[in-house]
Length: 263
Length: 344
Image 1 (cartoon, rainbow over the protein chains, first blue to last red):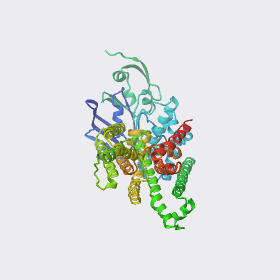
Image 2 (cartoon, chains in turn yellow, blue):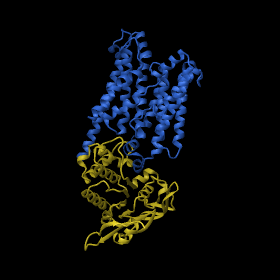
Image 3 (cartoon, rainbow over the protein chains, first blue to last red):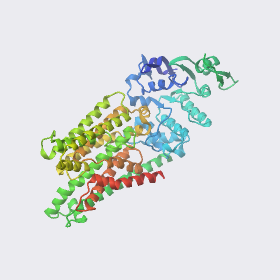
Image 4 (tube, each protein chain N blue to C red):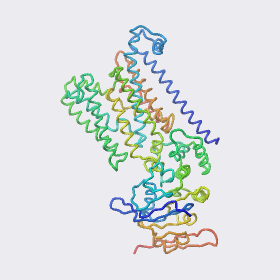
């Protein structure tokens, strides 16, 4: 398997506060990686550094064997699409046009038939046809989140960066959306990868190929859900007690029991 | 083709149809405006025939039209285009619907320049008829300079631009008030007259220069449409994720709009309302796709300016009500009606 993203020695600080400390991370082709960690662990900052929303210093920062510092923002947006935790809606436009913004790196002025078809297909893929010509700011939080994920998919990148993509979704939609992202990432013909910052440990356990546990800007451990999501690791990083249930088939399930009081 | 794509194309065509209809109405209104005035020997049809070159009219008639009324109507069109476009661009790049071309302090800079020329008698331009205009333009350029300097700073946000603009407005306002305190009655009335906003000051040659400058800057404005679409919807981080550099775009747009506003305001005085209202009216017709919003705002701007100026000239003839005043008096309530109707 080839590396899509390779990061060595990534650091970032807000003022004197060091958020990411000498981080090393690789994402393979066709791999879905979930980053777990407490609030302020540096999950969102990591995603923003990769998308160059935040300026970072690093020894090696490569995407598809190209150095990230050499890519300009338009070139980068053809390779990476980023879904923020929430999108404030300023001047609202139709949902169809929001998803069309994913095609912006490829459009000069006129929208081509191909762009329109990509947008139509993506809307249909996400079951958003009925919303296509409604205003974005009239939608509920969960509907908006799906639209923004649809926009990221219409961008047709190599790497998805998703910050809490299921935070506003109901249970059914959480599974639907994750299944769709997983299906896109598993497509061998068209190798893509995804890096998710997520809080829902069971969603991560079910869909991730690999889980990275992040604490205080450092990677505690990384590996398959079975390897990483042990009661000991969960206790160390999240300070909660838990029970891990390994069913004879399917993904492991974690039951969170109680907080572990600080010593 | 996909039914969703078909619907999208249909919507788009509908919006373009509205823009064309609006252009036609503006053209019609300009011909009506050219026909309105104190000379009774000129009705609308004769005016239209003279403009289209079908009828030559008498020398007097053609002089009235080409030398008196035509520069004024053309100035209305150009000022409307410039201020409305500037308004739409600024609202988009600052993500704020309350912003108008006056927000950044360009106009208060111009007012300070005018006041300095009228009251102190100092101007950077020594040609008597261009003293006030030249100084107003020079002082607004100073404000443009401040905006450029701000744009070079690393952590500049949309809010900072707006707040600095407000600070500039207060500072120049205070200096203008101080100058007024020492001014003679005649100077005060001259300054008040400048502030009202009028389209009668520039002659045909000046209007031509202004037109070339404004129309030359317009294509650049349109070039930013897609960047503005992402920036106006989702803010900076969202824009970056689609390949936009929000800091650079914002800086460039504000410099361009400040320039456009300066050019117009130096000649016309303070006309603010059109830059706030025209983009919002356009929004009600074509939505927030800047590829259509910019041209539609421009046409709405011209339409409003011609309408206000023509009414100002004819309503209480022979008294002429300044276009800036007229614009606010008619435009204000109409604008409120449109916004409230949309809410309910």
